[in-house]
Length: 101
Image (cartoon, rainbow, N blue to C red; front, side, top):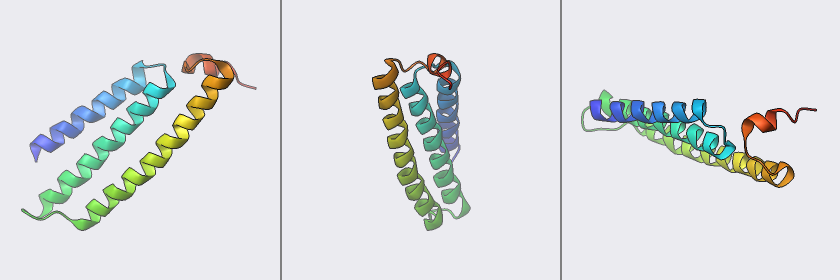
């Protein structure tokens, strides 16, 4: 179990690093997806830890729903990124912040 938790922690910090240091909108969306995948791995690791040799189906169903919801969020985020690039010719978040009304 420690291996999965270490992997989840590594994924979380990679996603957090991506959110803190990157300015590109698509890279930020990828960072959010990495953090969601770290949380999903955590759920599966803790569900398998409760009873040895058995994984809780509730956690599995939650992770499947989480994957579906995060796919929808990624699709909406990429649609916004495509619109921003077509309209403003940039994906830099600091430049897009200056375009407030």
